[in-house]
Image (cartoon, rainbow, N blue to C red; front, side, top):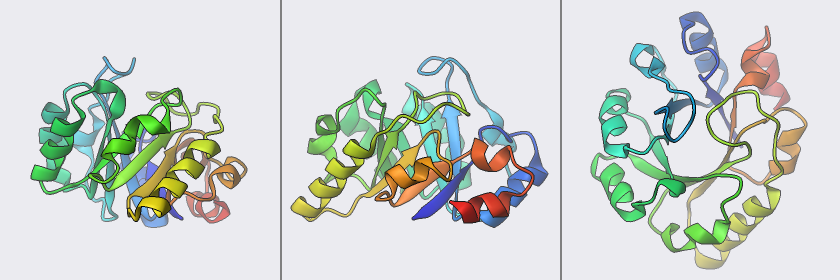
Length: 200
């Protein structure tokens, strides 16, 4: 399992961003438009020096607009939300920019809703909290992860499974079958990032 460190709560602190970059396997950029989510972010304009693979999570309605802004960071993955619609056009939009594409699903969305798209994408992001805020309580989504693991195996697919929200050294045990775990507050609220990452 890879750990993707979230910048959500340390977005204005370059020293902490550099430390997260040092300790984690990937770096997770949460991008919010203030419409799909209550809060809005624009901190990614100020991020520099990240050397680990970047995993962009677009919590936005206008994927093209924000894709233009994050493209400068050459992300490895760009993920958009199933709930915004226009699934095929957004998949093609991201692929045509040369990025691997992911679909995120909110806690209330059924995994079966995205089955028809899984042969077209590189990653599924299962939200274990409602999108938009850090430090929320983990929702058990292990059944969704198990369904995605089974569907991948049964259909000979190779998408990665990622989980995001409320991940710590206890909740990560419930999602042990994912390929990538996004973790923010558990790491960034501590004084020793490396210790927290190792505990995960």
